[in-house]
Length: 258
Ligand SMILES: Nc1ncnc2c1ncn2[C@@H]1O[C@H](COP(=O)(O)OP(=O)(O)OP(=O)(O)O)[C@@H](O)[C@H]1O
Ligand SMILES: [Mg+2]
Image (cartoon, rainbow, N blue to C red; front, side, top):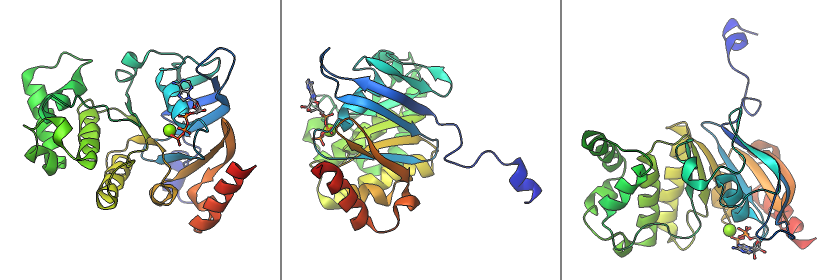
């Protein structure tokens, strides 16, 4: 082993995660737990992906990690710090952004006003806002073009890009992203997956992606969690599942068929 290799940090996935949850149990009512025992990790510069059948608890997992649901047991950690049950409005300050499954823009506000709301949790100076907007417009030329329009007038795919751009204004370290291409045309879907991948690869963000488009998601994923009725059915590095996506999908279908 070379000296450089000895000096390097632990190899992923043994490296410390940015965000993790352990043995999470949560639900919408006191007596029914949707999440029965779920542990997931999200690493810097990596995309972790949660796949599984409809209604199995994928969105519920993100809501519980982001504080919309108070877990009945289990822990959520940001690095070493325990943040279980932290209110959602505190999460952005902790470095965690959440892009929900349903559209979350203010449709009657302009694109630019929506972007500025990405900094609602701070009191930024005008120069800071201008610099952040410049940065976002440089990354997303389409959004720059549409900055004066009402957000609700944009296509579904463009609105998704504005949501990602809005979150970038706050420069979080972790992204929880729920079904980013639901209802988006196939061509724009490709652009959105490229953007999600580049959040991890180019900007070093830790991304937890929930997706039903399993083939598209797996193409950008490093670590896979297959969820079945509120618990992890199977997990591993993308390579461990092999290069045969169909075989993985078959495992997923098997999970749903039991
Ligand atoms: N607000 C809510 N109140 C009560 N039950 C809910 C609520 N939201 C979801 N559920 C229930 O929780 C279970 C898990 O739902 P969840 O939305 O987490 O599934 P999902 O895996 O994200 O599904 P999909 O792939 O369709 O998005 C379902 O049985 C659903 O009906
Ligand atoms: Mg969902």
